[in-house]
Length: 359
Ligand code: SF4
Ligand code: SF4
Picture 1 (cartoon, rainbow, N blue to C red):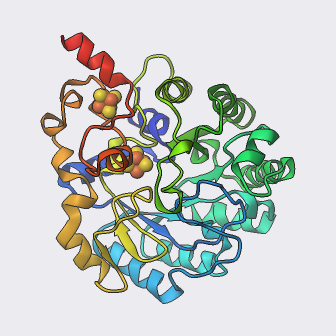
Picture 2 (spheres, helix red, strand yellow):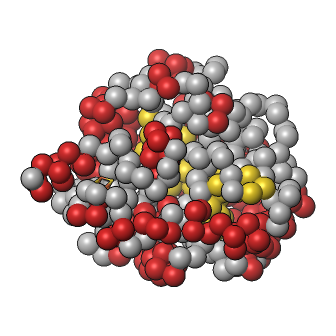
Picture 3 (spheres, rainbow, N blue to C red):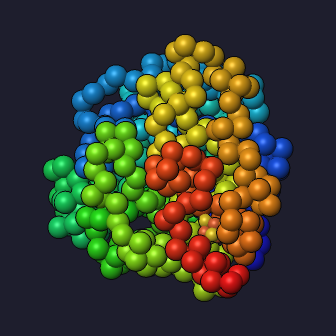
């Protein structure tokens, strides 16, 4: 498997040169990607949203704060900005911000609901601003009844609008392997439904799925009932592995990205908190109090899970797992189950196999 196909199959959007560079950053324990939650406005209304996004709440980072962040990131050698929300394309100044990021040599990756892409002009601008980067849309289910359960005011029209947005991106020249659909997997969705949704995107649009496991985080913290059970997790994530990588494996277990992404990344939430991941809402500092580069200098090890970068230091049985060259389990799962983001991911079904083969 080539570097490009391995990387594409594990997460996506990275050309071979970027994947190699990201691995070098991992070895050097540096930040490759900065996720910026640029707004908490979003029209999609996911019932489990970690950011508590609404169509109208515009509290969040302002333009000068984000521009300062971009300059700090470029100064630290960060290579990519992942624009998160809310929906980053709901910001009136989204295009100016992405253009500024590009002028600083940063790659733009956009995580959108997909709804703004219905506008062909928006789709064209996004395709241009994300050259060399990826765009992820968000349709948890292509089945309208399930979609309606997962989203306030969810309807078949919303699904059709996002699909039309993807078609606009393709028409604007965005390569299929730089487009993804994102699913946040919850107990509100039966395994077959998530599996058929992943298959639909691959068959109909040639797009792979970024599969995220719901965690009780942020405003969703009191919704533990949305956590799927272990067998549901195994069925859906195993099929994600098969669809994205083929039968030859590898697996990234319950992770939505490989450890090279996860271990070279930090998030700034729409409230300014700096965290290791958007699913972990508790920060090590806030950019409204302390400059971002100072926070990174003081807390880099926490942000990138530095103690786990050496496979021999992973908790057992990850230290002896055949998948550990690219997997270390979802750190958000570990954090939300026991409070330690560097502990074993209890949602990984492969742990049982590794233990039984060792005994
Ligand atoms: S045991 Fe650890 S390294 Fe192996 S698949 Fe599970 S989380 Fe990944
Ligand atoms: S901790 Fe989990 S949710 Fe966060 S980036 Fe890593 S794999 Fe994704």
